[in-house]
Length: 434
Image (tube, helix red, strand yellow):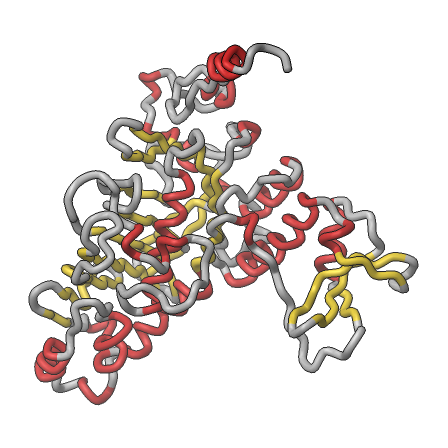
């Protein structure tokens, strides 16, 4: 369960921005949106969902891109550029694209807080990448900290300190149980400026188990989809037979609710890939789904397995424009599923950005689940805030018409758009009607 994510000096987010997935203490109502996990004597609470609003180029996608970039760096274990492209987010593998493009070189900071296996993990690191598009800068991790249940496990800056509180000692590698100081000295000598200590020295010397819990969470429980229009879900089958079509019952049933016009959906092996097909005439006739089905249907078919995966594993699903080309009623139902304790038993979370104002609904989202991103065009910097940050003294109350208020700019994060002067000039310049 994600509790919060912080970023600084990433593209348009020059100053530190904290994205909270914890309930605002002033917010009441829609308590079914709140998840709780008890750790020791303390309860930790998280929101089931969040929706992000803002005009084009405000930084909504940059915020999701920052999450994707942190994930990519952690799974690589270093701040070198990636050798292979695994994301449509260029900044995740070309780190010279990360820093804000205005100003001198400054550290980029990532921090995340999440609950996993009965523990609260706080992991953060800051790194010097140079200025924007400075490819040959000698990159360096300047600080890296891991805390578990509020207790510092390690901190790495110019020096290195490692400590294992009594309740965490069970995770310590047996070879260093009585030689923690010696092991710390060995790890210090092995530190590399461009490598994360968590994924290297800490994992190999101190606690493979703790490092694996963190890395597995990033890999399997932090599902970040940058540019959801680029995803294409592929299926793998053991020894698929030539010309055989494998019908996917769950996906077919879900797609029928969505409104497919074929009888079923299935996958067929083609040049080492499993290609999705629409099936007709009691499955005797097959047409490639991308040829026959609508773009919205294909988007839904590609995204729905990720929803299932999140619900089954208790993952946090973050998607850029999750709702694009999909009917709002289908999206509302998916959102309600994440709010349903009888279905969402594993505390899965859904985070997405959108331009569709229909989700600005007091009966659908809590005020602390509605986020806004706004950008200063002169400084090229973005800020992020939630509807619950507005005090009731400012006229923001539960049950208000959030959609109407948004369009009259009571919450900010909206921009007037008028192409008329530009088009009039173009028409005049071209001599009127032609």
